[in-house]
Image: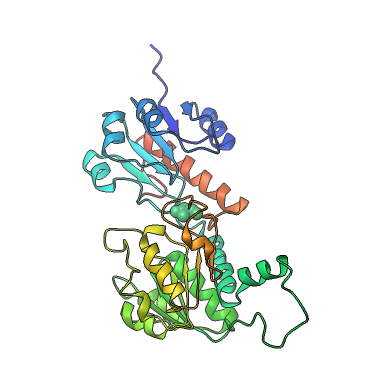
Length: 324
Ligand code: DGY
């Protein structure tokens, strides 16, 4: 009697992922769109009796989804390094492995943070808009002036892989002084950067650039709020490439309007996409990227490869190459 193939739900249409799984003799059910997140009811229906799920950061893999999947489910593999959309505790309790994609997106995400840093420090968005709007008159000695990145004090919130990559570039290319904060000291990462560990409040008070790289957890949700923004220097810029809900956006808006800080650069927002009528879009000193941190072909290809390897390992009861 022929054994039935393991069944994997892929929540977004990515031809490469589909082909690789088919080639691995997996029964693949793929949501047919690449430009739409799988609707909740489709996810709940299609996940039934799956051995594995290959999902995106846009899919909430919570109690309801795990319950719909039933007892066959062995692995949830997300094509992202962040896994705040997955109920980790419940997966653990049920013996479901979780795969993620660490390591391959450090450079692209750090480079995105650097792009935002320059956008913020050099008033790039306001300057581009001004030129487009016909306000670019005769060269003026002090028009469009921002501040230098070189020699800045940089405060890293979360010295993980991506935070460390950003810090390393800022240190070596721009001779920045590095401070960092987080749940614990990381001497092995900090030492080569000569990075100094300090409290969040100290970091906010001393940094010219604050760059957020921590994961979204219950303790980092709204870590940046109406109490913390006023602790920043009024000349400082705030960069976030981690997750939107780490920031209370109303507080950020108020702080930018009140000039409690000079500018912000966000690659992540709450919600995503950020509605076009959101008040943050009205601010000349707030640059918003549409979550492009890891958006290079090389990085996304590497993320897809890891997500495939993780799901295949999980459905065949092998250790995942990159398990949470
Ligand atoms: C991730 O992988 O978590 C990133 O946010 C995607 O850019």
